[in-house]
Image (tube, rainbow, N blue to C red; front, side, top):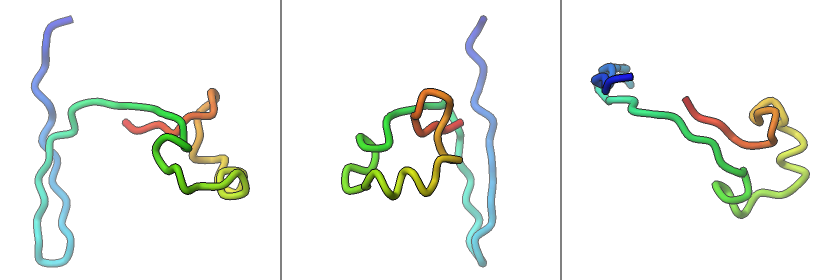
Length: 58
């Protein structure tokens, strides 16, 4: 697989236009990402976790 340029994405927030380059994905444990979180908080939002119990981003 050869390197590919990141796609350019643009969103509007009020009168401001934001252009960014999404360049990858990551997943990590919720407690590493949000150390102040509690088990009750994570249990209330299970839809945010993948099959391995990690928070993912694409």
